[in-house]
Length: 187
Image 1 (cartoon, rainbow, N blue to C red):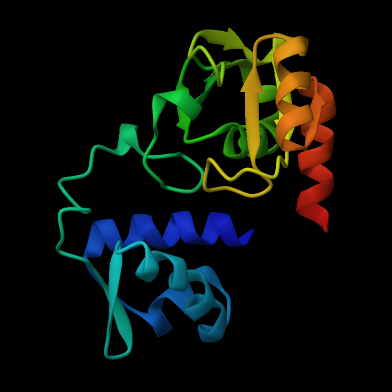
Image 2 (image 1 turned 90 degrees about the horizontal axis):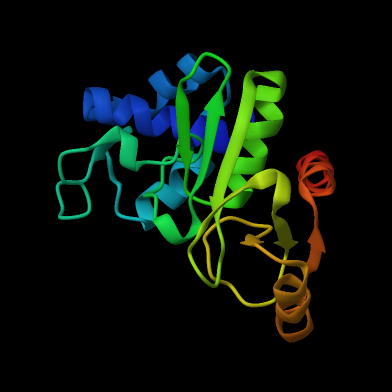
């Protein structure tokens, strides 16, 4: 299980139980307690959980209003903002929403043939487009989204190339972008 998958599972457990022991998470996810501590570090920094003696609890802050799970990324559990969203339509007609193209591409790799269509939004105009016609700019120098390597979607090759000229990264079509993300996951 990848760290991002463990973090999503930890969030699900905390949302369900509100309080959980590190030892329980370690046993449930079959990793060491030290690994759990590394995984929850970002959740603590984000204000999603607070540490307790031997465990963590769901933070009682404005950041944790009643959760509408459809507004959270299927992969990393972060809030979804339409400007960066990625949506997968599965062969069983279910949909999964993801916070950004980075998470969308990873999830698309995980689901493989179960994905019948992928939809994202143009970074500049916000218009909806199919991922199969999208130009993905991977790893620009400017940080806009939370996931790394950052992936931004563009509806035209010209716009993607202009963005790359100004902010770095490299533009790819869908199949190439999936291969780059897959390679990055193995590093």
